Image 1 (tube, rainbow, N blue to C red):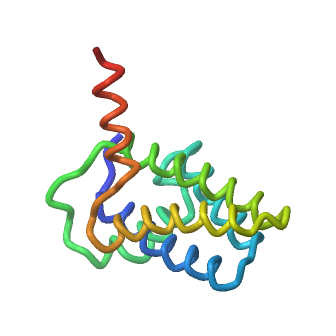
Image 2: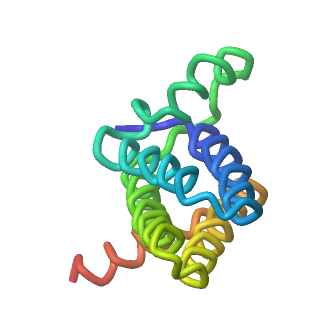
Length: 136
């Protein structure tokens, strides 16, 4: 499946804002909600994730067609990695292990920020590296 590369970048921007709010408030419930968003994108695909639906309904109709599409595999893998960090962070906050919540959320925030601002998808690069090493 192919996706408009602007969609995952939009999702990374929304995720960045959510994760900043988590770090400011320490809300494990907000981080758990973001974990659900990551899980939906991982299991059902980027097109059916909440941020993907919002992009397709609200943003994409106002843009020119994309110059090229990209494989959905790497960004979907990145969503799975985000899910793991959000889950660990949620457990950290919910159990009172605040340093774990802050650390996991901070790492997820760094990855989302890199994608939103610079178009560098850290999870996508991890996916490609793993594919190179497992293909041989």
